[in-house]
Length: 194
Image 1 (tube, rainbow, N blue to C red):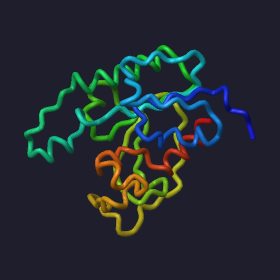
Image 2: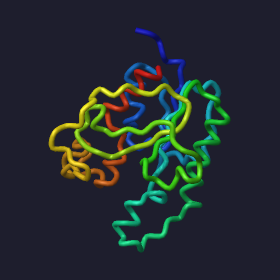
Image 3: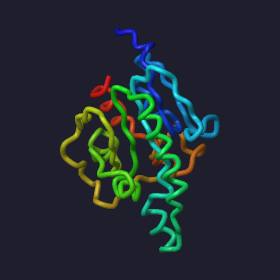
Image 4: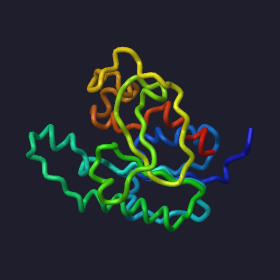
């Protein structure tokens, strides 16, 4: 096994650290930069960063908030872009070998940055639910492990709340659990971007 302890991976706005978990398991020096301990807007990155994974909160960019509020939710784009801008600043400072910024594919954030480079569904990597997600950055595309959509997974089907990240059921809200990077995707991303 390779010694990866000198390869720093920054997991910005990483929450539970699900996206960087395969890197940590492989011995990389993973640094989780997430609230409440670390505010990405104030974070000063170390020298020699190998890769950056960033999952800024989608709350201010999500169409779901607007629809669930029956059109009454007003997005605070400025507040949301502060975090996205901080992630991009860290990428510019570090110039890592690879970097990726994630948000839902139907997020308003792409209007303010650019078209994403990669779009996936969790079911394509073995997680039996839908949440179309987009990523932009400089990375090798992960290879899906499932090509055909699972039977019974209809266009707007939702998993039962208890089935989304069951290890966090009761500790995190449904929205927080849906924000966790699907484990199958995290593994495939790691394999494509060592």
